[in-house]
Amino acid sequence: MSYINRFRKPRKIVPLIILLFAGALALLTAQKAVTEQIEVKHDVGTWSYTTKPQQQGSITAYIESNQLTVAGLKQYAETNKALASELAKTKMQARVDITFRKPVDVATYRLWAKTSGISYFSDVILRVVDQNGKTLTGQIGSASNDPLPEATFNNSIAGSPGITSVAITQVRARTDSSVLPALANDPLVFLAEVTPNVVVKELRAGGAADADIDKAVIFDPTPLPYLMEQLGLANFR
Image (cartoon, rainbow, N blue to C red; front, side, top):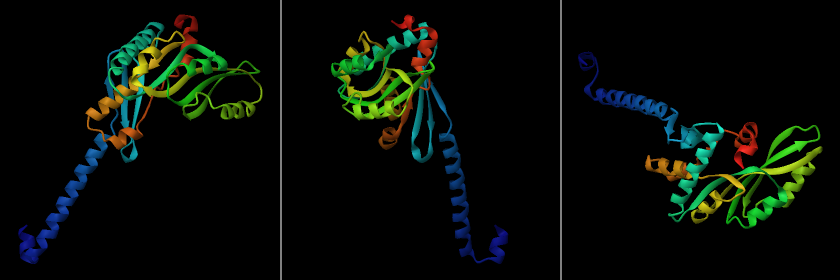
């Protein structure tokens, strides 16, 4: 500092101090940004979720059962039943991801959907078998109150020659929370997954902005229908 006082006019000190302060602030901001990018795992007993902030404040959360066994998945389903009953006490639009006990044919699915009480269907997950016996997974978007848009479905099938059978394994939806217990106890349904609603609640309690929560991508990275087939569908009936 004495060097500056001797060879510089005192007024030059102020910009230097501002510059140093700005540099320190930038460093702290960068350190904070790095910290916020760290993945955080939240263990909730029979299940857990990992949050990973993305660019521009968006959030991705991965949900999974802590035990990928027949017993573990059944316990996870029971946990979701209990959560569904709790959520039913609140008045809200809830997300629910339905996994059927076994793949259901299109006619059965449409009939089920009419009486399910679901008000908004996001996506329908298909199990498709081709002429070589190979099993494939497909997805039909709805984003409406139509459980399976016929034109979209027909065009998708027509564009995939060699298909011998199509069935529904899952549906991602939103509905009034009062409907959740009935869905969780439906005889066709193995799992009515409502854990995404718990994740949203905890994100909000942790200070996440509503705008970021609205953009959050929350999903189960485990292909549950495939896992159930590997473990034996008879175990889930």
